[in-house]
Image (cartoon, rainbow, N blue to C red):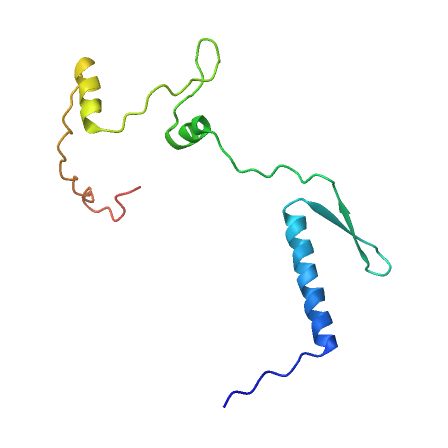
Length: 129
């Protein structure tokens, strides 16, 4: 048999609202949208906010991502201007044509097995140091 939940008391509702508003204020403070100022005597919290929130965009341009990931410099060494992306190679056929025109190998090099670990010298326990 279904029994409905009892209605919350006014005190429980006020506590819930107070906790939720504190969480919202902390969230906004972490996002640097507002600043919380606490009065030393009574512990009263005052919200000081700007009319416009700070720019918190996490956009990173493609050239910066290439520099961070692959160490590719995206600035011209002669004139210090940013380089522009003029082509994107998506297919193997196009890549092979470009490599052939540059007289570079187009085949993937074959893999060789890894070498075995070094053996310890006679009487030595630690071959790393």
